[in-house]
Length: 83
Image (cartoon, rainbow, N blue to C red; front, top):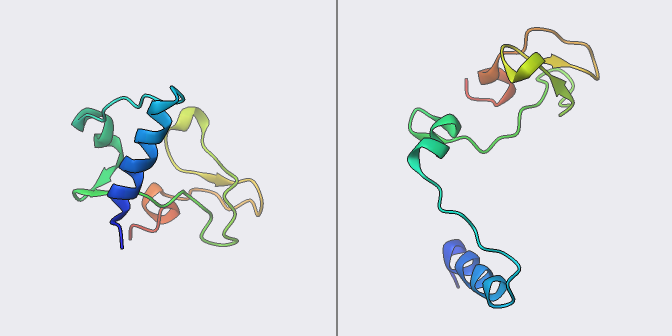
């Protein structure tokens, strides 16, 4: 069975062959905002009360507000289930 990275590399090779995609390399500075305790954050933020993904925060700064159930002051760590 192929490793996931092998499958991705094979797919990217096929896309490059037909000039559909040329991905840019990811640098450490790009990934820094997506790392928590040295681990990559892959959980999309959602409401802990109703599980909705319709969250809002002004200028993408501060705590979230759920647009579905109205829960306020949802911390980043709670919304991404890092706690």
